[in-house]
Amino acid sequence: MQPQKIFFNWSSGKDSALALHYLLQEQQFDVRYLLTSVNTHHNRVSMHGLRRELLQKQIESIGIESGTLEVPGQPTNAIYEHLLTKKVQELRYRGFEFAAFGDIFLEDLKRYREKQLDAIGIQCVFPLWKKDTKELINEFLNLGFKAITVCVNGALLDKSFVGRIIDSQFLAQLPKEVDTCGENGEFHTFCFDGPIFSNPINFRVGEIIQREYQDGKSTHRFWFCDLLPE
Image (cartoon, rainbow, N blue to C red; front, side, top):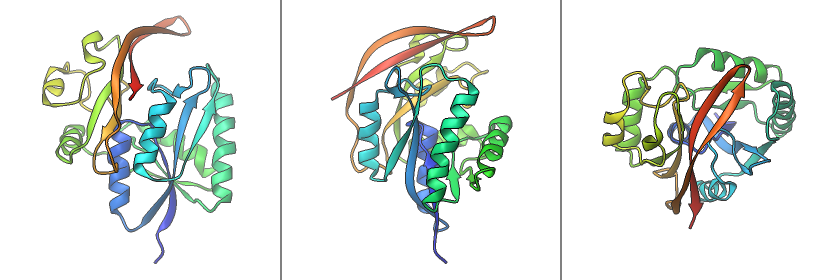
């Protein structure tokens, strides 16, 4: 039986890297495309704040065809969904019937993805779904993956947690209410080495800044670490 063509929603972080690693070990699927959302205003990976140049270096090291979902600075849900639908329809036309994600346990997000893509004829695959996050992060490290935090939620983690390599010391210092994989959005990472890469991605740590975002009457603060290509 021929493997099924599948595209992977690549975020540039550790969960994406581990989920992609899982998929590449399976005979059921043939990963032929990586799709990443990029904020066109900042020219960076959405949510992660990673420079496009480093994303491109990742993709080149992985060696799989890729593309981006070009999202404006502050898109509404309607705009985002329109752009995603258009892009996924193009992939569906190319014969893709499956899409993979690195989500672990967020039920609402899983249902949202499934509902949105089912309308286009795409089935969702979640290689990490419902796995224990402590076991996942340990497996990630044991496999030789390396990642650094590029964004942390300032309401849960202070400045010292951004621009940090994910290792046993980092995990030991996480507050108890923070998931070890940051699955609730506590932190985001850039994966720069591991078994899915042909070579490590070289970078240096740049400026660390805090940004604020308004959500109705609420203000959300995040720390970002700018990584510079080398």
